[in-house]
Image (cartoon, rainbow, N blue to C red; front, side, top):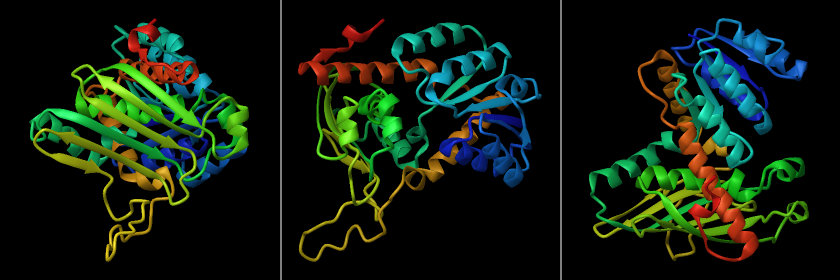
Amino acid sequence: MRIGIMGLGRIGAFHTETLAGLDAVDSLVVTDPVAATVAAVTGRFGATAADSPEALLAAGVDGVVIAAATDAHPELILAAVKSGIPVFCEKPVARGVEESLKVLRSVEGSGVEVHIGYNRRFDAGFMAARRAVVSGELGALHTVRSTTLDPAPPPAAYVATSGGIFRDCSVHDFDIVRWVTGREVVEVYATGGNRGAEYIRAAGDVDTASALLTLDDGTIAVISNSRHNARGHDVRLELHGMKDSIAVGLEDKLPLRSVEPGAGFPAGVPHTFFMDRFADAYRAELTAFTEVVAGTRTSPCTVADAVEASRIADACTLSLHEHRPVRLEEVRA
């Protein structure tokens, strides 16, 4: 199949390399506003260059991967859907829930599959955790803990336009809690602080955050996030049930150091980057998209899924600013 890639920044270039290595992909067409970036990618992977998204959509592609800036996502998704071309788009669907809902309404009933990129759904550990919940081997859940700690904050320009830590970082935790547990969030309480980069405070954001989520069956989910985790990129999930407890991310590359006498775990070199931690998941995610393009499966993460994760992020942002619990109904458009 022939796949188009719109946007060749860090994640777009990474996706191009991954797609070039998939057996199902015969050829690539790429576009980006930066000509030098396009030239570098076409030279390295033998891709064809398109001078605009419109030209790319007209180049006979079977599917489109959107890795452009967030503000461009709605327009590009809708252009591909109008052309009848299946879409993979990196999260989020749009900067806010209201605009995301407009995209959802336009996509619904179109018959065109749209797959939103939440890579943890394709990580082996997270998939095993979901199977454990579905099988009932854990019993009824009472506590979930989801952690995302980055080794260093993103650039100031990114922070200034990201919408805040809950919308650009914690949203991965929100999505995976919904997916693994199969439950919906009904209430949140969030807090945060600033102990690091001053430009994060200047942007009206926090660099460390926590949120308590109440799920619709009474399970409590605890979310922990930080932009400053010097030991590495730490992503984990704990599920505690009435019969058993399990953890995702409890392995030798865990960026955590034990001070228990004689402890030798974890013994590996810590993960330092999300592309290191989730390299296999990204490959599995794009492999799944080729199956969506081929028509052998439906979207494994829909626009509706992404909208719900964004609603939780909005509720947490409101809770942070107003110092109070927020019911999800308050942020439903």
